[in-house]
Amino acid sequence: MSPDHPDFFFSSCESQSEKRLVAYLCAGDPDLEKSVLWAQALVEGGADCLELGVPFSDPLADGPVIQAAAQRALAAGVNLEKVLGLGEVLMKRLPKQVPLVLMSYLNPILQYGTQKFATDLASRGFRGAIIVDLPYEEGDVLRDLLSREKISLIPLVAPTTREERLQKIVRAGTGFVYCISVTGVTGPRDTLDPRICSLISRIKDLSTLPAVVGFGVSKPEQAAAIASFADGIVVGSAFIRLIGSAQGDPEAIQKQLKELAENLKNALTQHAR
Image (cartoon, rainbow, N blue to C red):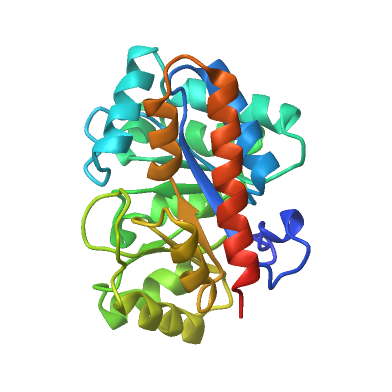
């Protein structure tokens, strides 16, 4: 791992072996002010890292729950620039400092300007970026720009990733490795692809980066199972569903978000190897 890209989870965990909970929010759902409340609740519940999604009109990797959240955020006028501003606000208001990661599709970044994106991402306090539809083979320019700002470009891999390509992706990655647990879009699943365990093992042979599992993870029992072989989980749709299903009661939503985060984090902790 490059010394310029330390494991940024470490500062928010008591030990490097602690299992991490990465919580995803669609920024600006239903508005930016509420996103601050949701983020505070998730961190109070035990989230070790916050992933802020940039709402996008054509989110090909996202299922209906996050698609609906993106539409609500877009209707509120949220764009990449405002999500960057939200990050800056969160860094000042969160009860403890947790790393912020921005998740976006490539098009909003190209529209914003890649150099300006890298510079502003760093100046607003973000530690990493996930660009869902950026192929590894086309990522050199952004990887270099972000690296100069000490921002991790977090790689995405799946059980279907071929071995030769997996080696290149993981060895070029920084921050953590995002392991997609299913073939398909985001959203809760009852079962996970059994190949995810062997994928984590393959990653561990290639890198010391934390390997976390996302897409389809929503329940404490899934968190417990994953904790036995991976370094953590990413949960998004389960949180977004709570936000979308509640009707105008921010305090109730905060309570539910905090409780779910606590349950997931406890499951990770109690069932860690």
